[in-house]
Amino acid sequence: MQKIETIGLVAPSGNIKNSDEINEKISVLEKSFKIKKFYNQNSSYGYLSDTDENRAKYFEEAFLDDEVDLIISIRGGYGALRIVDKINYDLIKNKIYLGSSDATILLMALYKKTNVKCFHSLMISNGFVENLAKNIEIIENNSFNLNLKPIKKGNCKGIIWGGNLSSLVSTFSNEDYLPNEDIILFLEDLNEPLYKIDKMLYEIYRFKKLREKIKGIIFGDFYFEESEIMPLLKEYSSIFNVATFLSKDISHKKNNVTIPFGKEIQI
Image 1 (spheres, one colour):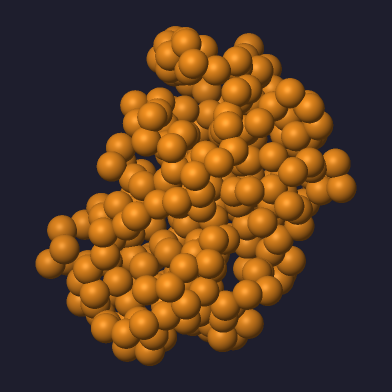
Image 2 (tube, helix red, strand yellow):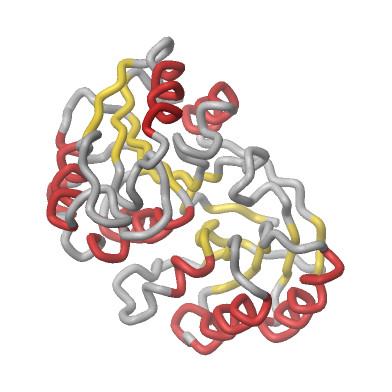
């Protein structure tokens, strides 16, 4: 068990519009943990929290702080792709980082390039604090449980790897962030029409070096009625021809289960 005492907060993506609400949630965290902020609360850069250079700098500073045990993104949105190649990963120390949505890009990079323990989790803006005790338990014990509904039955083994579908696909301009291991790919997204989900899933299939690593797939919540999206998910279960599952535990909603990113599992 790794005990969490000090939490560092970062804002590597979208701007913080609801600062009063965020500060209320931080106040809840401060009852149990020491909190250190690595972002400019009074800054924004269009729809981003700060300039690319400042967001990368603050992100590095959080990992350089010897007191910090756990680093959490305030929110996702957009912007991680603009800084992922600007971060000096030689400065990144062995801590814990969690995020999701746009932060999927940072999870992929940290897992591949550092020894940081990563978790795909809700963030300060959308539910981490509301499920604080359960999230801290998963992080400290590196153990989780998902409710899975089989789509294409079978067994699979690999590291659990993936996250937000559109964020993941946005990295396909190079292969820098692909894992070395076989993977069980998990995916979720919101505000994307079916035809775009179809397009992005096929992009994954076309990316041969990634496709060859996929030994199983877990489809999370895409915010459609099951009757609307299941035909598409069943089709891709056949296209990929691997064991495939559906789980509503992977989502942008407060029921999301925190997942140890890169942990080897067997289904």
